[in-house]
Amino acid sequence: MSKTYFTSDHEWIRLEGDVAVVGITDYAQEQLGDLVFVELPETGRQVTKGDAVVVVESVKAASDVYSPVDGEITEVNTALSSDPALVNSAPMGDGWLFKMKLSNPAQLDELMDEDAYKATL
Amino acid sequence: MSNVDTGRHLPLEALHIAAGAKFGGFAGWNMPITYPAGVMKEHLHTREKAGLFDISHMQLFLVEGAGAATFLSFVCPLDASAIGIGKCKYTMLLNDKAGIIDDLIITQLSPTRFMVVANAGNAAKDEAHFRTNAGNFDVTIEALPRVLIALQGPDAESVLTNAGLDLSTLTFMTATEPRPGWFASRSGYTGEDGFEVAMPIEEAEAFVAKILADERAMWIGLAARDSLRLEAGLCLHGQDIDETTDPVMAGILWAIPKPVRESGNFIGADALRAIIAAGAKEKRVGLKPVGRQPVRAGAPILDAVGNTVGRVTSGGFGPSVGHPVAMGYVAKELAEPGTTLFTEVRGNRLELQVAPLPFTPHRYRKG
Image (cartoon, rainbow over all chains, first blue to last red; front, side, top):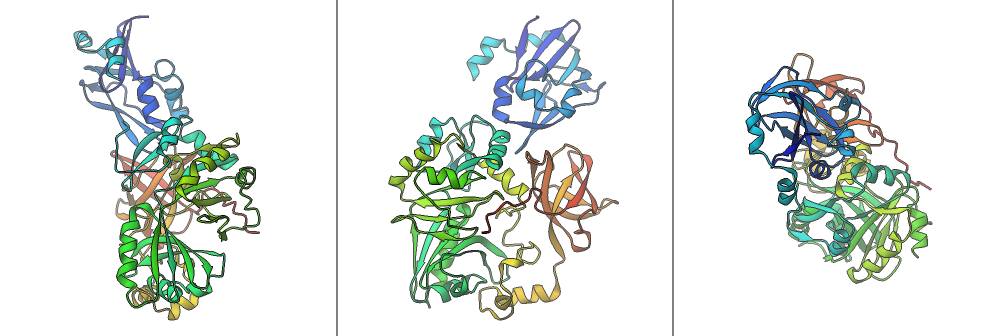
């Protein structure tokens, strides 16, 4: 598996071939609590690093998830429509949020690796 | 999202920290919001077994004296002398416009002694209101330092009995003083059978340990307390009712006995009678969002052509019903269950159905 990068807003991003998969970290899902709804973006949308692209809703509140880098949304995890709790049970796996084609892969180098991210928690 | 220190601390805070609670600010208190089980499991556990809530942020007042009943019947739309010894009454403090300063439960302990349980966020305001209006009455008002717990759910009675406190003779909305300094009522804020028990702070830790020794009982945080009460269709003061809403529009006029409505001499009586005569323009209703997306407090309620016809006052997800649930106010002619309305969340138009309350049936032990 290729390297996973992390943001200070608790997103992760991992390259799989020429697209990257994005989700939220285990720490983030634990802080949010049980998710009951995930609002996913349209595929084809062009996003800039820091754009709010996903809304995750827990029993109590709604929170934004930001795009870690610039690019185009190519796929969203439709399984979350019927089972948003996948983000809680497998945040780094089946609970991924969306895939994107990067406009500028060098932006990944501005993000943290796992050790650096864990040190911030 | 972090454990920010916010205000006053529960006497049993160390127990909640040890239980792994996540804390958050509520009504000026640092409160356990969730425990490691999480809001969904906590909510369902309460409906299936017994949920233990630390609600010591709420304030007990002992109101005592030869004039206590007439005093309470002046500050509340109530005939306090007619509550009945050992009976609890849901009531409220009204301002002179019949706006709701707070909602309360008052228990008559004797002809001259009453226990008042007030909301945390309003306790200081309530106490000031009591004292301002107490001048002409032979009454003393004492704020009692207590730990107040709620044990809610079908196993609550049996768990309490095993913990050495047999309250099985109480029925819904009756109360007793089982030990010196203790006060216990069969009541709650979840729609389930259950109890609220106040005790001296120094006796609380040992008693809570006895409850938690029973595997049917577990700590439940404020997040699940909110989803439980919302499914049960119960109002949260500060959200669903406040000084801008009155008992008629809020649909809690049932709490004011008819003779009191007609001839009671309480603060706000004239305003309330005028509101009853004119009829409410808006009504509090249950709202069921169509689909899975929750609708939150503050969202506008729209009709089919986009006119604002109301507002959401509480909203979230109902773990027991398995869909989003909400409450709010709508124009009276749109308050019929089944009416289709709309709201807007982040620019998306969502459909709402006016729904009967409660969303989950109440399971009170009415005896």
